[in-house]
Length: 233
Image (cartoon, one colour):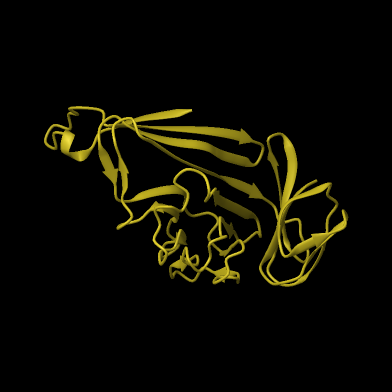
């Protein structure tokens, strides 16, 4: 657990750096399981009335910047090669079910960065025409952007707002889909991400989530492009 005591700019002496008050508390709780770094909860508690006009959620820089895709993003269904130009997810209105971005390095290893869009702040302070996730130009930083300009997050004294998400690092174990294995709450699970229709052989005990994927316990089949499943293995 990490606690940051934060002072608003107007309460800092910009000449000496002295703080006149602590204005809000940001508390982050991490859970680390094998190759899964969970941001179990981030809470922002206001100690006085305040507002936030822009706020970044999970971020990542450099190593996994060869290619990327966005899970079940209706407007951005492909695999995107990093050419130095900015890579955006679909907008909130175009791709309301996108909650995970996947980056790959040149060894075909995967990094998933995810946000729970229905928990706390989620996507509630992103405009319909804004993108929640993007990689900056020139192999720059990847961002989830949770509070956008024009979607101000306001606090009264003692108000609390939260979000959660995380990072998963994995080899690619798939042939016809991208398959990544990870541990969650002590249970071995896998993401199976299809970019095109097809069947992937994988033994599993149950399906926790799926979009346009069916299975029989030993394989999964995608009925459309840009489909995925989260399974217990």
